Image (cartoon, rainbow, N blue to C red; front, top):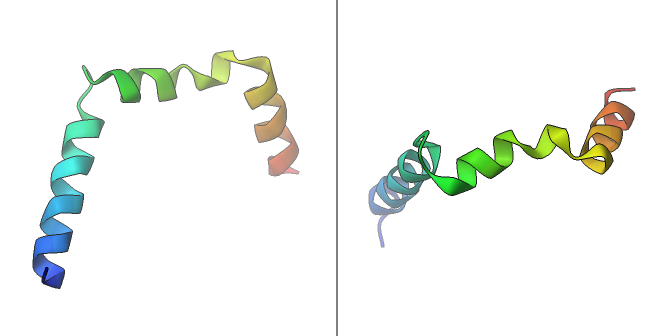
Length: 46
């Protein structure tokens, strides 16, 4: 597979997952509501 074909696949999958109606995107946006995730993010900001 050429580099251009690889990039096309990556872009296509990114676009698919970035769609506001895709369940993966929705779950990722909800991660901040999980206390453990908030704690880890706060720790990493330090």
